[in-house]
Length: 364
Ligand code: NAD
Image (cartoon, rainbow, N blue to C red; front, side, top):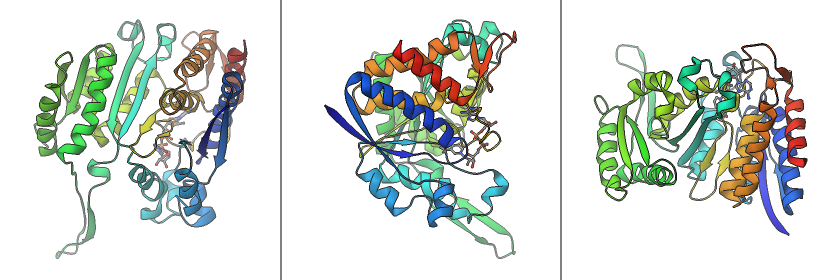
C-alpha cells in the first residue's frame, strides 16, 4: 500500500472548520484508492504563537521537514486582535513568509474556476461570465517586496520612516516564468504577463526575461498587460484570460480580485510549489468575521487537497473526482452562505453539510 505523510496545520479562525471537511474528503479518497495518508498535526499561526511564543514553532518545522507535503489552513487574526502580537512575530511575518522561504515555494498556482452552470455565483453581469471562468494565476511567492530588505527608524527631522525593498534577480524571474510557460503549453498556449514596466525597473527586467524565455516557447503567444489595466480587464472580460503570471504582490492582490469575480474567496484554493517541498492552502485568510459559526465555505480547502493529490502524489484521477464531486454538490441546487443565490431557490449548507455532500458524492 502506498503511504504519504502530510503535515496538517489547521491555522486560525475558520482554519480548523474547513480543514476538518478537507480531511474527511482525503480519508475517503485514501480508502478508495488504497493509499494511506498519515496525518501529522502541528500548531501554526496565531494559535501557535499564543501556545508557544512562535507562529512557526520548532516542533512544527520538524514535522513539516519530515512530511511529504503540507496542508495548511488560513492563519491570522483580525486587525485589532493582531495587536496582541508584536508586529514582527505576527502570523504572516513570523510564520507564513518563513515557511515559504524554508521550502522555497516559489510557484503559487491559484485556479480561478467557475463552471458554466455555476456562473450565477459571480456578481458580474451574466453576459460577462457566460460559459464560466477558467483562469490559472501563477504568482511568484518567495521574492519581491514581501521578502526584500526592510528598515525603519526616525529621520533627522524626527519623522518615523520605513524602507521596504522590491528586489528580484533574473534567475528568480526566469524560474516562475518557466512554470507559467509550461502551464500555458498544457492549456490554450496564451500567456498574459502582468507587469508595471512604465514605473518599476523590476518590471523592465521582468519583461526582458519574458522575451528570453519566450524564445524557448515559440508556440505560446505572450500578451503583456500593465497591472492596473489588468485589474480592470479582469472585471470587464475575465474570459479573455487563461494563464496569467506575475510577481508576488501583484499576484496577492489580483488573485483576491479574481475571488471577487467568482463570488467568494471561499472558491479559491491554491498550491505553493517548492523546490524542497510543496504546501497547499486556500488563497484567503482566516475570515475572523465568520469564524466559529460553521458557515465558512470549505471548497477552498477541499480544492487545496485536490491540488495536493494531483501535484504531490501523482493522483490526478482522484483529484478530478474531488473537483467533480464539489461541482455536482453545487449543481444540485445548493449553495454556501458566502455565495450569491440570485433567485433565492438554493438550499444554504453549513460547512459540515457541504463536507457531507461531497463525501456522499464521492461514495456514490
Ligand atoms: P479573509 O480572506 O480572511 O476574508 C475576506 C472576506 O472573505 C471575509 O468577509 C471572509 O468572511 C470571506 N471569506 C474568506 N474565506 C472564506 C470562506 N472559506 N468561506 C466564506 N467566506 C470566506 O481576509 P481578511 O479578513 O483581510 O484577513 C483575515 C486574516 O487572515 C488576517 O489576519 C490576514 O492577515 C490573514 N490572511 C492569511 C492568509 C494566509 O493564511 N495565507 C491569507 C490572507 C490573509
